[in-house]
Length: 457
Image (cartoon, rainbow, N blue to C red; front, top):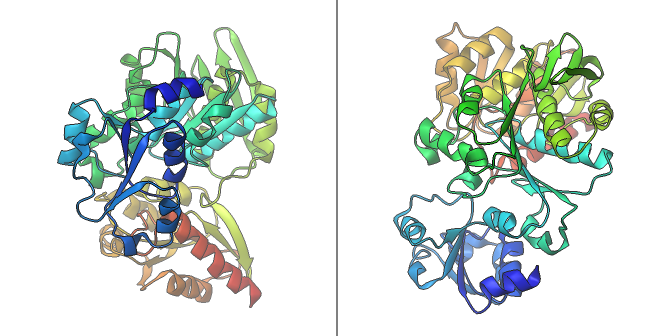
């Protein structure tokens, strides 16, 4: 493998656009392959902070600040980070020359093992993590990465033909990708990232890359309950199966009463029980059905899926139980950066809910969320730049008891004062975090820390 990528990159000039910590592995890969690397980022030296030392230690050229995209046509390949808009004129020019690529594209190019991918507007991380656990439970070697975990380009030499590679793939990673996984899942499609993709058509088109380049022998797993996703079966080139919470599907997997059923031709088998699942929330039943089908297609057993269903309790920042204080339970759902995610979280609890919501704006609509809040929430605490939009959506549906606060610390303190034994305090913002935090993980970690202080009182 080293011989192959050294031949591709030796003595060639490559630019890496976007210098997040995850790109350290990418730059090391390119340097080891013999490339002459230039690292580019819109942030200045002072804005880079502690990261600057790590990139300077690599001994590469660094171009920082407003002119970071200048001179890209001098490079034989430009590797762009997922969060960098690809519609920038300089990058569109490079794409037209056929020189634009990404870390994920390089993983597809150089992986010796088969690749299985998961995308969707929500549920990606949980589904991807479940697939990894089911494959491990089946004693199958697996690497999990993409939008989660460590960048797999740094482990590409260790990935052999017998290894399964499982990738969570965001719309940013899929946009422009000319590879598709051997097996793929689309969990659902709802409005998201319209601040970057601008239209739903653009967003959906990016998602479709997960199957656009599949072969007839490849397979695609679709959410039958989502009309937008179900319709993709008509144009997908590979084999199709479905998962559903409401309908018998074949081939596929579905929920009937308490039974999770696998169906393939004349074979129908109950492989798990809803009541025995460790994961909370009906939406996670759908994630588990999707994960089971993808894992099965990758060689795992249904029995392994059953065992995982009883032990897997979820991923950090996704309906994560973080503590209890004075009879009130606190849940961290900071991953909920869209209204649909928050609506799914609200549907996961029968208890009275004190909801903390709001954050930075992704140009999404909150009308449906407003109704869900009026139906399910005891008290609403709003913060961030979307607070006004969410308030308006709630008021238009009849309103609930609510407050607006300046920050998360004030929100948790207020929830603590208002909470009564048996209540749930739920951080599920329905908004991105960038107005006050670097990412949703930092927001969720702060919430977790604030709740820990309550428990010490």
